[in-house]
Amino acid sequence: MKTRDYKAVEYFVYHAFDLNNCWQSYKVASRHHYRIEDFGTWCDIIRLLDKCGKDIRNVKYICPINLKTGHDHWLKKADAIEQKRRDMERMAKAKAHEAEFYRNKSCFFGIVISDEDIEISVLDSLEAYKEEGNKMKHCVFQCEYYAKTDSVILSAHDHQGNRIETVEFSLSQGKVVQSRGVCNSNTEYHDRIIKLVNDNAHRFLEAKRATA
Image 1 (cartoon, one colour):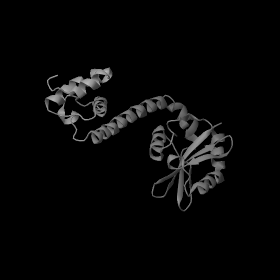
Image 2 (tube, rainbow, N blue to C red):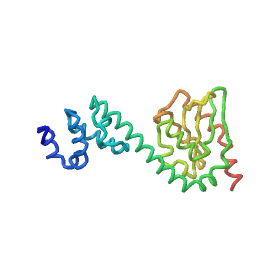
Image 3 (cartoon, one colour):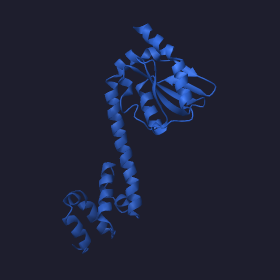
Image 4 (cartoon, rainbow, N blue to C red):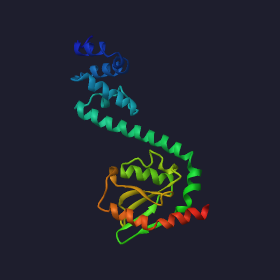
């Protein structure tokens, strides 16, 4: 090698996958006298750049001043892209159930339960389930709660619109079976929310009977 970078030779000899994917990037970086201290981390960056659709022969991207900072930056970007892809797949799958969702759940739309501090309303669209799951950092959308025919899912929030907990009401049991805050935690309003919904159980059961 012209640059006599024996460290690079040693790394790529034992990492054929990185050799195939990163060699051209390495040659560009080498021509610009960029010294790679950690080839494993640098090759990770090249793969992450590729996942993010960036030009892996552009020195702007392949020659970061700080390897760790560059790695963490592009990992975050790649994770966001992957999350968006998964969300799109989940939404496409959910859309296949959309007609059934509206057929089973529309009779509950518009039911609102409130007191002086809290307002609890039914999630009335697939997008609402997705938003609830994203904001509350739980699996109400990922685990397809919209497809559970026995359940009504509600969002409890304060009068400023800040989400507090997500509530699952069972039609067969006629009561709340779970209520979860951010990351499935219980909030200071937990018992109060459950009591509010249970005290209004008849509204859900009557709405269901009206469509039978």
